[in-house]
Length: 73
Image (tube, rainbow, N blue to C red):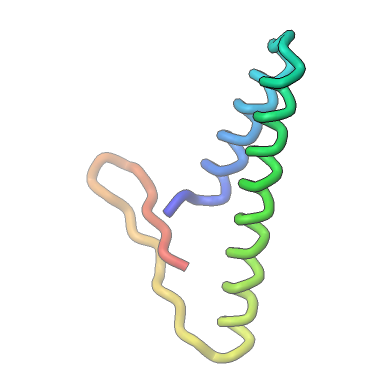
């Protein structure tokens, strides 16, 4: 699963690409995709909060050998 830091970096990268585009359809499409990504992230965050408040034990972060973070929430 993507970490919050990685997710925000990807969203920032997409926002930079949107600024470079001239085609309004492409801009609208990328903005809609970014909005869906942000909403999915919000849903994931809300689920984790509900799980914590319900006393569900969460899986701790794991690091792979190649320094990529794998987070299971």
